[in-house]
Amino acid sequence: MYDIVIIGAGPAGLTAGIYAGRAGLNTIILDASRSGGTVNTAPLIENYPGIDKIPGEKLMKSMTEQTSQYTEIKERTKVKSIEKLDDGSFNLNTRNETYNSHYVIIGTGSNPVTLPAEGVEEFTGRGVSYCAVCDGTFFVGQDVLVIGGGNSAATEALYLNRIGVKCSMVHRRDKLRCDAKLQEDINNAGINIYWNSELKAVKGKGRVEEAIIYNKVDDEEISVKVNGIFIAIGYHPNNELALGLDILCDDSGYIITDENMKTSVDGVYAAGDLTGGVKQIVVSAAQGAKAATRIQELLL
Image (cartoon, rainbow, N blue to C red; front, side):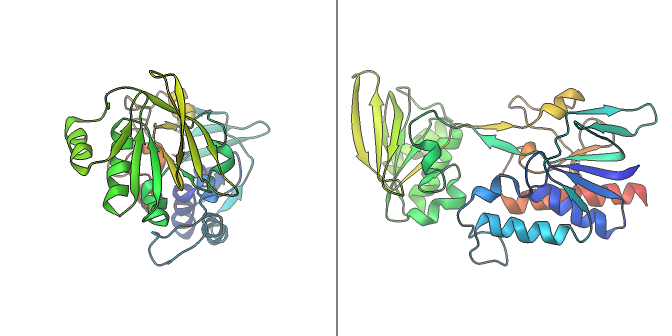
């Protein structure tokens, strides 16, 4: 019987593991892939407090090593389902084993919605990004495209424009879908928009140098010289385990929690990108700490 089983070894899960382990709680972290999560793909992180510049993979390796001093981490161990038992504890079922625990912290994160355009996968981390706050400063004074027309895309474009990035937007409709105030801000900032258009291909030698944009009204393709492409068409929360427990989620699929990261199911907590909001490493880490600290208070 574990005190806590943590699902996901990203910043939220690893931080929860540090706090739980240091509190003397019998804890284990299970991750379907390898420790570090999507942060491993970040080429450089400049906004984590106390560290000037560090590759994402290096930061997560350090965090993993620190966590492993206090909590066991089992990589490539996918939790397929969670069952709540009559005594209030939980069975977490993997392919080969079942883990029994008093409490569960779900930190399975979310994945950005990507595009099928040629070159997007190849140039991810080499000019293609999904986070302006994370990577925007690398493109100050350079030309970039923001793909999308909703609130996320508008917010990303305005942020990039504000820090001195030469930003244009590509939207597949003839009108933005974002809030009216954001549309006004985009217009006032003079941000160029390629209307009725889609990203068809990304090209370059080692890094992004060119984007091919298709205008479906004019039925023509144009080539645009750019240094970066920010895809902002949404995220997909990895909420399958939560849905299996009938945990309450919002309209976008993000888990709803209280101030202590508790979900609508007693004994289950959630932390990190899976809860929506600001998707930043420092936020995920803070939520992991809050969840583990609250469970510690309940157990001790």
